[in-house]
Image (cartoon, rainbow, N blue to C red; front, top):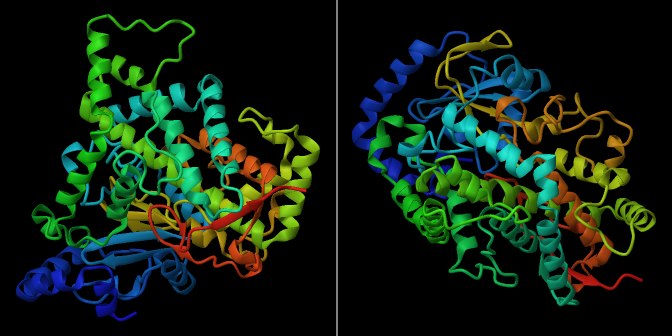
Length: 505
């Protein structure tokens, strides 16, 4: 892809042209000075151009481009995106070096410049370091949201949301359904009930029933991956040249407005000692945040992070699994038979899904081929350290290309084929110990919501397959289903999965 096409396609060409023309000498000087200090013993990579570095070589599918670079230069490579140094790991050994051996020094985050850095210590997902606030929030989430005890306490609520989803779908017989939207709404309302005891979205409304909340959240996610001049050239950071930080702040405040009144009301009741939670009443996660002295802004940021983390990953995983099973009739048939012989009339959230090994193998295979976050969440080097005998300078941004690892024929046999059988009888899991398979990461930054997320994927996917016979609109051939990917915070299908269901025979 030509440099002009890449920049124009990402909305950067005009801005960069205006910026770089008068400042070219300043940037070249800064670029040369920066890398003359830190270029010793870096991982290999394609030669960078002056000023732009390797930006012109990334393209619209960076996980693919960087996998190709790894084939050419090795499992640990370095790239220059403008003046920002990026190191990418594309093998189990390189991933282990970052996520295990040097986890202490490489567990910081590189916050996108569209975010408000004034609150960098408040973020959960994007927290710049693993400080006390991050530790206390992670402990709260683990104990009160994602532990076995917490999931058991939420069982009735999660079952209610599952039943609501199935009830909506039963009224859509012979109508086209967007599977991703339905699952997204289910997961979002589940999380909003856990935190605020309120549904925020409604089924059947693509923009959400509350003023386009879903659309606003999707917009916020786009800002994370949208190319930002300040991410490539930090000397421009203070100026917000593309207005992304301003626009992101506006959208974020609009999202916060949906629950800020509830936070104030709950806080006021708690202060006046008028709110008494009976022993049998389920305590909200909001109550736990208030009890631990979280400010309104901290609660806002925490809630938004939890919504984003729990919805897109689950909905995309289920959408990809449904698409793969439709393309692979034999695999779909095996899942149906397993469900038929091991379940009663309906699937419940509390079903023992360990009794469904083939369904679990299908989920694992989907997570291998279509990891929710192809690079995990970008890390940043807190200190200079070494990985695989190469130097990673302080403040280097770090990607783990789990997408590339999952497609490496040296790691996986026939890696591009969807073969759930490869996981049957294989002692390989996604809990961060097997670095050839880390769709949820590893180390201290591993996804804390893994138990909850997998439980949701299992129950929703099993219910969709057990209850309905899904076909493509206009009786299209599922073997020709478009499986192109769209890069983002989560790896989405480029064309959303549109399906029609018929009654099971």
